[in-house]
Length: 396
Image (cartoon, rainbow, N blue to C red; front, side, top):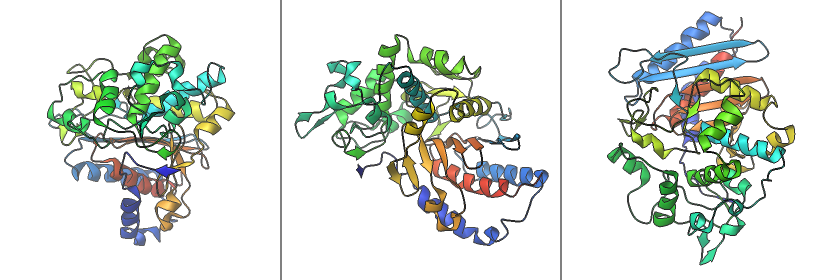
């Protein structure tokens, strides 16, 4: 299968350069550290990250190890630039594409319940008007062929409104920073791909990360469940798991009490521009809530083992060292840099705003973080490498 990437992740080169620069430190990577030493080192790294990036005002990190029942949590910086209010480990934040994992989980539940299969065409629930023009390749309309599974795995061929190439008009990300008070609707986001972009290939032919595809999944889910997407998330995930600090953003503006989130240096955390992310990642949450969600998902409390295995079959390559399944990606650190040959793989969600929620099955360890900047995605993963090297040396 051919691959076309929505995101030039750039993680491989960044991680390689980072590891090479710290090659001397790797020689001491087996020296044990106390809890106090690890806490000090990680907190200093986070402070340095915030100080070294003018687009950041805060950094949050959680590391939870199941075997030791050990929780490490850190928060540095302030809620937003110019604020005296410190960021807290329980501060709510916009979790970007972590929301894709939640949406994929709900579809997995529907598969387990026999409501649908991953091979069902999305046209079963979306009308011709919604799908019109999105899947026309070389004069042939493939809309009736597109499946739920293809949309979840970014192989449907649909364009990506978020930062995919355009044939006309102003790219959506430029619209966000030029007019952060504009309120987007899901239908408007789909229409952008229809009117100003082209499909990247026929269904099943090409991997190309697409937020447009996830908006279509959200619209289809509303038809299936007969309820707004926000209510579906509440009913199926947030309420059953007691994720009291999690919700899909449906109101925007000054009342949005979340940590700063910057796009091209513009803080959009309290602006209508956040409506640019919906079913593909419009969830506000906290690190504690995400830990509850990830533990429930990986522990078999949300979907069956068979369905979880399908969601975590990472057969599509985003780039070297990064695979994609359905709503989740896998980071293969041994491929990101040969110097990390002993570092185990993790999987879960990575958002464009320097946020992630990842699980290491070999060590039953969870990594959750938020930096809150579109300019910090690559560096967030570089920091994760350093955090893992430190945590691996922790001896209580």
